[in-house]
Image 1 (cartoon, each protein chain N blue to C red):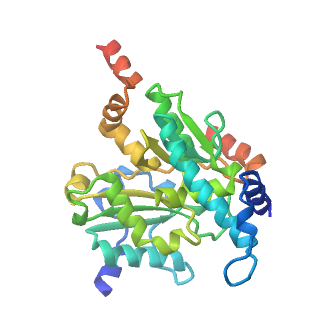
Image 2: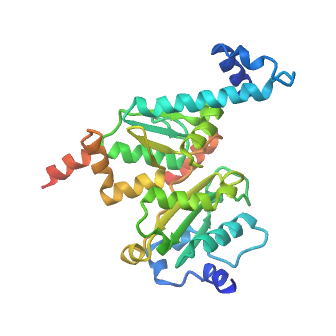
Image 3: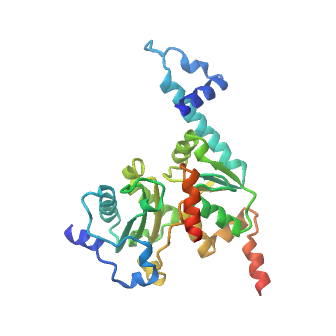
Length: 156
Length: 150
């Protein structure tokens, strides 16, 4: 129910009154048009959201209080590498976002990690990248120096 | 077909068992007809990826869902079909195979996808992190976090 209200508000706000007009067959589109309007808005927004920041995470909960063990794992891994300044979006706050990001990434689960607008994977992939050293390299390509390199240097 | 099903339900008395705490996981049992999703996952992964080794764990009991749920799974797939594929390509292959389950009742799927060589050099099964309540939040989170700290 909330998502229907939410999508209606979004459509009205964006001035998409034309979606409520009659179609060629004379029928008035109401609910389905509103939902379509919202879905395509989300896809467009996501295209911008993933490019706005170097590191973007779609997760359950927030960086400060993850609400899912897998999302928390992503936060912890990034924190270990000294990456705290990234964009994170809580899908539990927005069911349209939660569904939309799965369509956008063509990936069925949350969390989802993006580097420089490119989809990297979920918790499992980030964990394996961390374990095999690839994460340090990928962060370097983003211009981010992993804190683990400094920790390694200090221990030598 | 029978041999591939039997391969799926091979008991845990192999060298792989040394590398993980058995207490953490439910013991592998013969596919129970009353667990249709788990059965479907095994069957589809076996038929599509022809794995050398496959383990499917229903981890729903570790999450804030009703008993008997089939919503959270962990799979370990060892297949030569993963040769030359990146991690994300491997995971997409698994996701695609289980598309139907993932778009219906399966809410979380942890994947380890290795080639036979990779598995031989590091036969370690990853453990899933403790649940933090998900969309339920509230007292469940606190209970689970407290349980994890004990």
